[in-house]
Image (cartoon, rainbow, N blue to C red; front, side, top):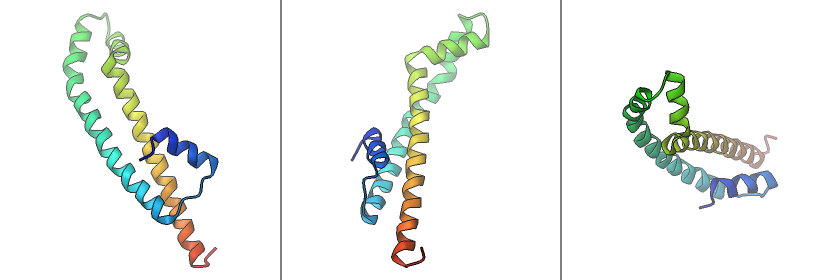
Length: 109
């Protein structure tokens, strides 16, 4: 499977994929999305306890939030949230491309 970056680059370059390839890529993206969600869930399960510890060491909730965002898990959380958005956007664009290809095959365009 292509990485998200490689796939984004190929789509940007206008590389043509067959409907079968597009369907397979969407299926792989769905699986990847599931893995990302599992990782994010694991982080979010740890967040409340760690955030409370950070809050005890901070003057305010805002300061605790900033400490969380600067922590290794906070950075990973942010990255995973962006990966989810990227996968969603790519999958949506591939679905649209499949619809266009279907209509072209039926001479509806």
